[in-house]
Length: 341
Image (cartoon, rainbow, N blue to C red):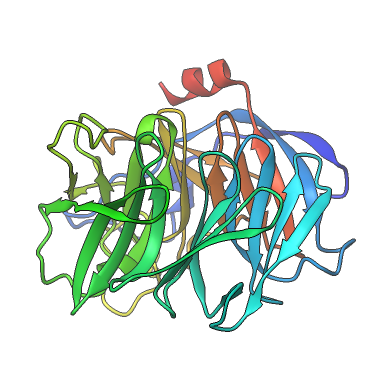
């Protein structure tokens, strides 16, 4: 990753070779991944080896003009432009104004800027595109994740009294109404902390459980305006593995194992997932249909990724393989669709 931009041809990998050290006989075990060949361009936007202000960028958000990241190393929110130039840094650790106790999610919002979810202090914070704090809202819920809904609305995932919640908010973080869960027990304690949430165009949202290997897309209308809003909990067809520290291709996560995924993002109609577990090193992208949850294929990439965010036509990611770096992944859209067929 020394060159600013390099074209990397991702070779086809055979899943049978990938799993050759393991005997898979149980009929409930799942089919192997289908790896496809695709040329991916990787641009390094910010390089921790050259900039000591980049320590642990583990929350990421992006729009067409900015990339925002929260750095656990110093507790500050930063913004860079699409060339990687540092524009501003804001905030610090704490529970006072312009401070965060423990952010769990950040989201680029309509009109520019970013929304920060602080689960530890049960607050939402709005920071504009110039790094100014413009809104601070305390909530009775315990928020964990935030996604963009239709129009200027937001979707907050949280929990209260051991029960998961999902709430539609306006742009000022005011609750509009609760969202129903379908196909998931109300007693699923702590579900919100197990989710990775991705949002794309037209309010499309998918929440993926890191523990149960389930995807929670919005209902088929992909909109809250119909009055029939809800989250539909369904298994990931065709149940391609998201993890399994024992190396087996399994439907869910056995008790005591690590999270099933590292992060998720939506670009266009596709949901991209970085699978986790001992069998994976961040160099695989699983691609699903964002609306149905149907598995399409997997892509091998030459660097390990830890954090993922989708934009209009590319992915922004954090690589912690050798040193922290924020990178952009791009490909030819037509070539991607041909490879995924």
